[in-house]
Length: 81
Image (cartoon, rainbow, N blue to C red):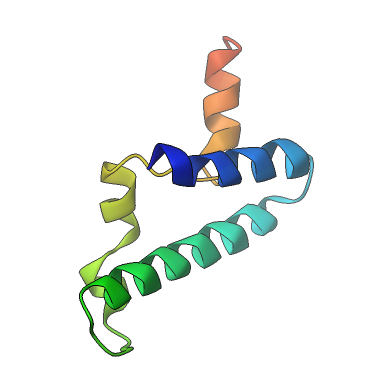
C-alpha cells in the first residue's frame, strides 16, 4: 500500500488548491482501478459487485491515502482544531 500511496499523495500536493469535488473523483477512480486489479488477480469477470466486495472502508483499513480526508489531516497536523 505504501507504493500505491505515493501517487495520490503527489497528486494531492499538486492539486491541493482545487475544489474538493476533484478529490472525490480521483479517489473514486483509484478505488475502481484497485478493485479491477484485485478482481483480475482472483480471475473473475467484471461485475457490479466489486464495490460490495471491496468497499472504500476495505481500502481505508489497509492504509490507502484518500484525498478527501487529506485536507482535514493537514489542518490537524498544523495544530488547527
